[in-house]
Amino acid sequence: MLNKVPEVTLWFWVIKILCTTVGESFADYVNETLGVGLVRTSVIFTVAFVLVLAVQVRLRRYVPAAYWLTVVVVSVTGTLYTDILTDQVGVPLWISTTVFSVLLAGVFGTWYARERTLSIHSIVTTPRESFYWVAVLVTFALGTATGDWTLELTGWSPGTSVLLPLGLIAAVTVLWRLGANPVLAFWVAYILTRPLGANIGDYLASPSSERGLGLGTLSTSLLFLGAILATVVYLSVSRADVIEDWQARHGDGAEAPARDTARERATLGAMGALAVATVALLTYANLQPHANALAAEEGAAPSCASDPSSLTADAARQQVATSFPAADVSAFRTVATDTLGLVRSGDQAGATSRITDLETAWDDAEDRLVAKDCTTWTYVDQQIDTVLGAVRASAPDPQAETGALTALIATLG
Image (tube, rainbow, N blue to C red; front, side, top):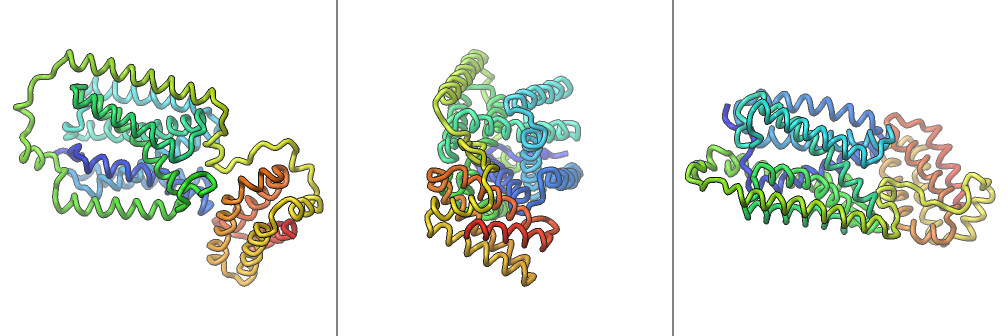
């Protein structure tokens, strides 16, 4: 076969980061916004991954559309596997990170023992391609676990959290230019692009209340999918990243100087020092007072002094009226009432669309409402979660929707 993967050019890294952003935002959109659920979403994308990988493996050369479609799907799939371990099974992120690191080392060790190379310039046999895609899947899962663990440790906002993987990728690039082993540098950077892309996606999709741009997961996914499509079309026409064509233009590397083992050892030591410095930074950030950014991203309610379950419906309604700004309450009630009307008229699509306005308004008002009355905010937040789940269910029950919306409207006065 001709080589089955693209040449590592600037285009490679641009589209790889685009794919990782889609992996984060689109997984969240299908799982949470559409209400499909984590397990069912994982099954859907596992099946999709098997299908697109089957097409990719049957090809005899690198085809940009097939290759990058596989990367997009595997990025979503790898993200979901880590989310299942964290959210469904309750595995701590440091354990997930450790397990995926050991698994990736095992994949690389087996790959090298059999093929004597880990270079992506040699993906010309089916066994090598199989090792390659297993490694890619594990790097996405590992990158997700590592990125989420960083958020958990530091409490950094989505925008701030972009800086760490971006800075590490820049440092690895410099070390590569100074003589680091190119295969090692490639795979380290490849892993780091996952938290970078995910953090970019979170920054774009998160509401302004969480210091994001508020584009939402759907808009972010469509934006980046469009960018991926445009890049793939360009690469398909220009063949700028076809290894054989690239080598014909730039030489096949036969005239390259011999590897400088002294430089490789020195840059390897620098990478080790960089890893130690990163651990020290994360340890320092973890010791500082901070909120759990990952919990906030996933919609976890803040911890309040009083248990919201102690509130009666009448007490909650009274607290809403006296504690929360009237303009906010009126806006929430208007959206809930509109949604109820759409449900009763049989316009489920309209109800699903309209309820998003409630979610956005509620998220934007969170900081000021929690500051006024945390317990009441948590009570109403639980009611809103029930409403969102009912309206966005894969098979909506009008009776359940009506009941949840009626209860919420009553609380809002």
